[in-house]
Amino acid sequence: MTKARIGIIGGSGLYNIEGLTNIEEVLLDTPFGKPSAAILLGNLDGIEIAFLPRHGKWHQISPSQLPARANIYALKSLDVDRIISVSAVGSLKENISPRDIVIPDQLIDRTRVRESSFFNDELVAHIAFAEPFCPELIQILSEAALATETRVNQGGTYIVIEGPQFSTKAESQLYRSWNADIIGMTSLPEAKLAREAEICYATLAIVTDYDCWHEVHESVSTEMIISNLKHGIAKTSQILRTAISRIPEKRDCICATSLEKAMITPLEHVPAKEKQDLNLLIGKYLPQ
Image 1: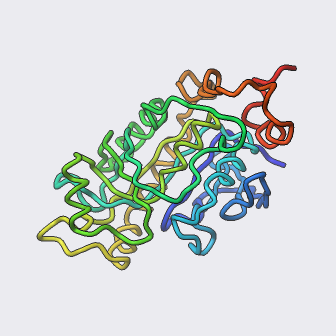
Image 2: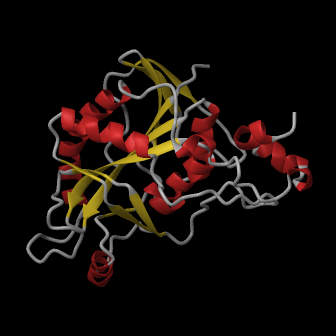
Image 3: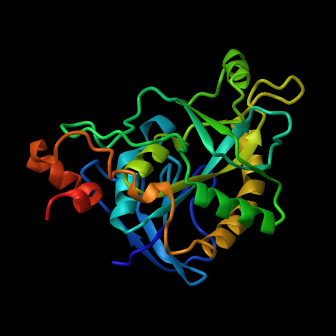
């Protein structure tokens, strides 16, 4: 089976990667179930990548039902150590317009029913998450976006809501009062799980609307999102190809060793089954 260092998780509107060659479709199973869809392994401009459509091949999985743990675990099993996530988001700021690209550096978690950790059963780990996105990957994406002459906003706070419903006007105004910049439904728990798996993670967010707070623009609708997504996906594909070519092999970021001092439970007291299920994540820290 082909391996890949770089993973791309495609959001709404991005269900395949243009220019991908030598494609191998891989159906995987994990201790956390099956991923959203088969992972496409292929070559993009001479670089091996793994592509996973977050919502399934036909966008049949709701944000609240996404098998995020299986998705991240499956990518890790293919040797992926960087993930670029593509997400459709709404803007909470006047100066962030529909069809802009945002590369956020902070998160606010408003999800409620999602499994957000691999360490829920007899092994406790507390990862540092003050910087939820990989700073090195953010920089690479930002420079790639500028190189493609895309209107890009580097940095900003992404508030992740449960969905699948959009916000009420009261909620939208509340999030604006918190100084959040964009709103969406998918970068969590992905970012938390990626950090637990010691994978670098960053989001390329396509702004599709002004949520529902804006007095002039119409309220968010699926039709509006799809229209603006078609424009954003074309730009996103350019950014991805440019960014991937600039990702170095060596990692010097916080993500690569995030589990080293995070596990609290003494490993000798962790059941063998749990060690086996999590060996992909913790194996290098187990006594040899």
